[in-house]
Length: 100
Image 1: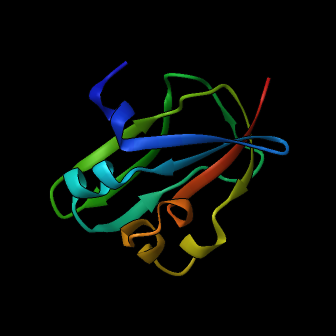
Image 2: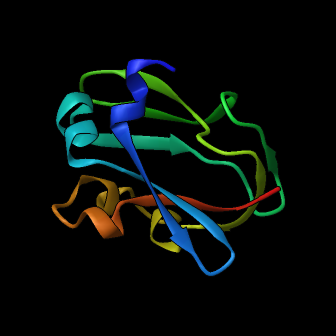
């Protein structure tokens, strides 16, 4: 896979996998101004585009590390993208995916 892998982390959740932005990803991209996220219920496929982020230094497509259905989108991202720009890596998550 591409170098984008270092930009995100995955963590097991009760119903699947949570996908978030690493500190290294934040540093590489700069301040994130916009993210086009999938919606709850969307199907995602490993290797296909999961989301698109627009930041100070780059516009990047981030591939999905898993195949499944989106079960949650970070509600903190509905109003702003501050959660992706902060120092709390656990808060910098995009979506939860139930794998199949």
